[in-house]
Image 1 (cartoon, helix red, strand yellow):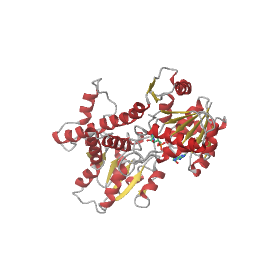
Image 2 (image 1 turned 60 degrees about the horizontal axis):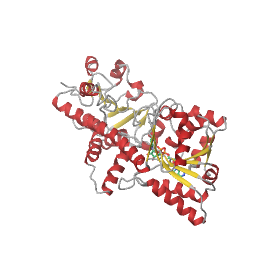
Image 3 (image 1 turned 180 degrees about the vertical axis):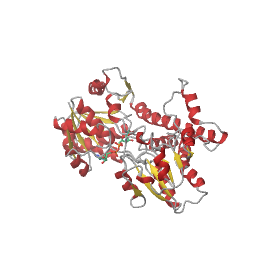
Image 4 (image 1 turned 60 degrees about the vertical axis):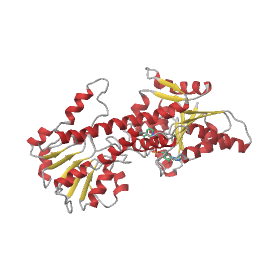
Length: 441
Ligand code: NAD
């Protein structure tokens, strides 16, 4: 069986690589010709552990190829996955123009039965739009060719995308045809042999599942951040409270770490899109509106703490930042808290030194010449007035506090991810600030 993956970004590239890894013949398509040229030369556009090896290995085996020619890909394949971007429109709803454009390409070029699977995160009703667009193009050609549509939302996590795809917690598939069900079962068989469940459902429920999952995770983060802020005021320690509540098996320890807000390409836009869907159906999603509000405020909390420490005057202060990506193990900076924090620091007249283990190239697209880049985490501290940790990269977790103290002008550390221990920082004579703990008591 030959499959096509249209949209070769995070999701498309990982999906294509993983399907080819289990022996399926895959062609990945993208409209970005530079990206395709690079991929054909083994140059991977993103940082994702294990991806480069897998792509290069499967290209050599002849099971994975890259093209900009969607017409050819549609003609050759039996299943086509749509994994193009669905960025937020001006009103927060998902912009479906890329998805619909791929559906039209399918209708314009298919010659035989085609199963069109939407893997992009799309609002309820999108698969019907895909079906309609394909049918319209077939009608224009005056041909009758059988096709099915399905929804197969993707749950991979950036930074662990390969492992998540190969060993998924679950695979969700929405469809309405037995033929499509047989095809999807056989495609995913290699990934479900060791018991990972495939959950079949109707298409609308599958589309809803993805938004509900991301919104639930975003809710957990905003909830713990809200509680953390209150802990700080009442004198409780969120690190202890988190352990206390997480050990309740109904709650669990995952996704209740306080910090400086969620970012990335999914949570912010998916929460917004679901709120918008609620509005479209005249249902006010009150919890999600609060989740978003808390998150927006949380992104400035480290800036507020730094400003307060320097008595409101950041002019000519140099602030060193460790970590720029929205989370560790990725160079993705979409909606990262660092974008807001750097902007606020610069507006306040501060100079900003930055270091990130993998996101420096990406950072240059965002910050240009407005900040100073360092290839070494310690060099970023030379002559800086304080250090702020924005991403919990493993290499920041056990630093030499002696070196940090020696290099900084004032011994101030702002820990946006609670990776250091309050007592140890006190022992080392740091002015230490984190989230949800009154460290000055
Ligand atoms: P991305 O921006 O990394 O990649 C999208 C790709 O689609 C780009 O390379 C773009 O050039 C290409 N494209 C756009 N229009 C095209 C067209 N008409 N034909 C061919 N290619 C086209 O996006 P992503 O992060 O991979 O996300 C894709 C979708 O998957 C989104 O809906 C996103 O919400 C969802 N998703 C993302 C993640 C994640 O962690 N990144 C996880 C789960 C789901």
